[in-house]
Picture 1 (cartoon, rainbow, N blue to C red):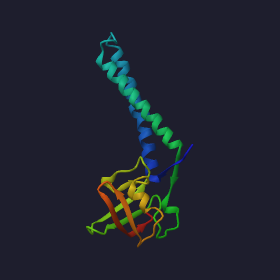
Picture 2: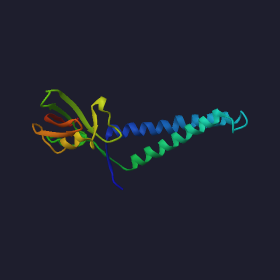
Picture 3: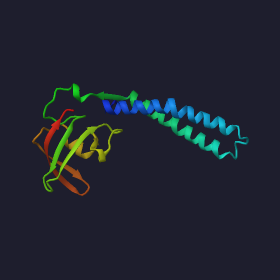
Picture 4: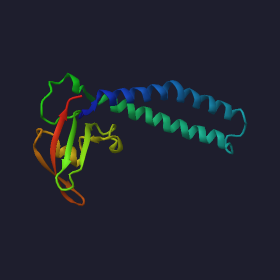
Length: 158
């Protein structure tokens, strides 16, 4: 099976969510189902059906996280010798050559991506254009509104 890259922070967040689901939410749902059963007829018991639906969602999420963690290739960028090359996990500062706006992104795994926080997936068009390039290089990103040219200003391995 194909391994999916993930940062140390991303793995930690998934493990914390998994722990919370198993130790907090799962027992709470079991208690809610038991409490709802005490109210009698299950066919017309909305509380029971809601708890079962929530249980189904939580169990599905647990399976999803366990699958992602089993297929994860955790990459610790701090253990890689720093260079000027853009790789998975590094932070990159780029400048749009047309508008002169500067952007700072960290290239992360799919589950960690959060554009508003400056975290982009390694599969995104910008990340694909940047990976393998060096500080000072120019890259062209194919965007829906047309091609955008950027200059790579800073590459940090933090």
